[in-house]
Image 1 (cartoon, rainbow, N blue to C red):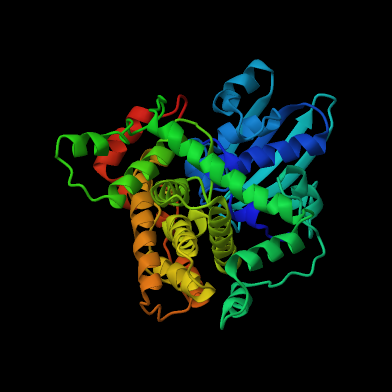
Image 2 (tube, rainbow, N blue to C red):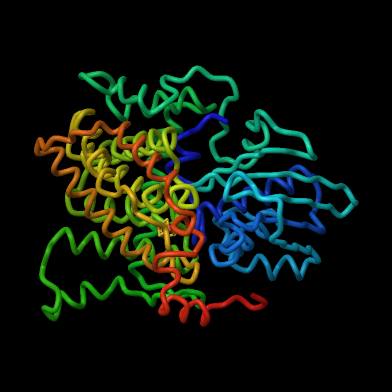
Length: 455
Ligand code: SF4
């Protein structure tokens, strides 16, 4: 299926802890419901033992998302949080088993479903990162082009046969080099070719996404609460520390820490966020832009161009590597978000295409090798700290590029290097909660306290 900036990179707009778990499973659930074309009654889900979902499907919200999708809920609906309970109340049974055979992809859903009239369908679907799904087989038959099916649950329907301005990250980079296309214009041209939409819809979507980001930040700042969470609200602590001089006045750095934390706290309290590119990394672009646009008062045209620069940068990463922590660790999530944010910041400051690409390159270079090791299967620790580090790295990288520092390694080659690192990253460090901070004694204590009933 053709990739799109608003399907794959700047979205989905969602609630829940994880785009590759919660958002993708809402979509898979909605797809099952659409294909049945009636109320689902009984659903059996199998996860392969060595995949990521076997150990994370509850903590990271796959079970919640799947129930919500089967019930026909949108992924921004507050009722998603209670969807498993609602499913039971409505007589919809969803059974999970962890059993062989193994699957090629760590996020594979094997689903058998029956509707109220007895109609049955079975499918195999993948969550490929950032809420994107792929339909691999339907009723035992391989699906070679899943566009028609996946379009049923994506916000920007894509064309199945298209002529795109570029088909990989190296081609995109060539078009931007030597005074070629502007980054935002190339992003818009790509999206026009990939989707059945007009230019006004694309420009509007960029500003809509930015508006949702600032609303998430605002909601997080106003204070949040949610029982199933590790961290209390902390976004107010920096400002309190500044007031009584415990925290030094580091200006924009403190603003960014507060904004990124606010967005992450909005996510952790089941508020609406934009997964850009993923829910785990949702604080980076949203928090940094909220703090910077507020400080420098950029126009909406500049914000729209900055968003499209972030979108194109993310699209290049998605074409060359990916966004799923289960595939490539946190370099795929916070690393990608950092590169996208660096590109947006360089664009906001009027940088050329070369400067924007250099900002993205330097930001991503600094994030290679970052592992995914969430504590107690919640996307909070060390995710918050990684989001803040990725944001400050983006600011530094954008300023280095704008100042004329040399990138040395061109952006597409950094993406290739990230893929190479991902393929050698042990499974323990790819969102399985089997290594790193996830297995420390302190993490295990927290895990015990937060255990789901029946686990
Ligand atoms: S460590 Fe990174 S990749 Fe893993 S869950 Fe947290 S934000 Fe996502």
